[in-house]
Image 1 (cartoon, rainbow, N blue to C red):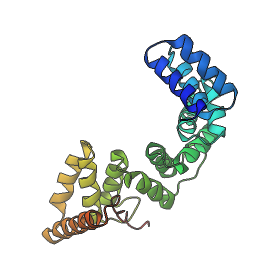
Image 2 (cartoon, helix red, strand yellow):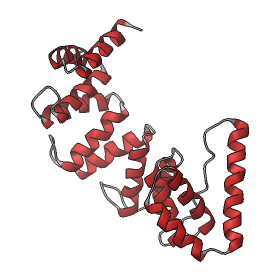
Image 3 (cartoon, rainbow, N blue to C red):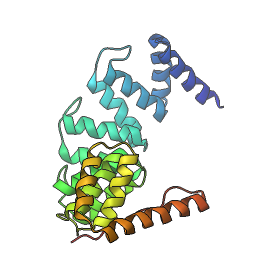
Image 4 (cartoon, rainbow, N blue to C red):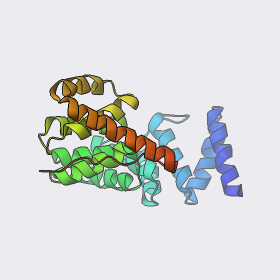
Length: 229
């Protein structure tokens, strides 16, 4: 572990022990030297009033510095600050820009948010069903239950995408495994509408995917989210 890493860990340990004076001194020194993780942690402390007075302006300042260095978690929270108008002037376009940046870093929650952006035409982007599905699917393939549920719901209804009950069945089943309560009722409703052959097909495809994963010892295979109108 490098000296810098040791110092950062000391700051985290001090914060954990509620020795905020030590934590802040160490983090501030590192943050001013350009350490992105320290900038992020300092921003979080100001946003949560953790050993300091609540100060969204200071939080946004430090989070912006970390975000500019490509730290996804900082980009995500900075996006929320712009969306909410805390510590910065409320700016939907800037919020969307940072949500996209965080999503491209692979953060599933932000990928889900970007999917919603394209679904409803918010935060500076136009409605785009193809982009909506692509971003929802990225989050869903990381096991993010809300995205899995949303994909299943969309494919079950066939409103913004072509109806695909077999793939919807798979996504809703995965959402339930991931802890989504709403997916249970939606899956029950869908099952009542599906033919026995469709249900059997969905189960066979899920079993085949599970066997493939077990054989390759790799992350879960992506499910085809269906076709956009």
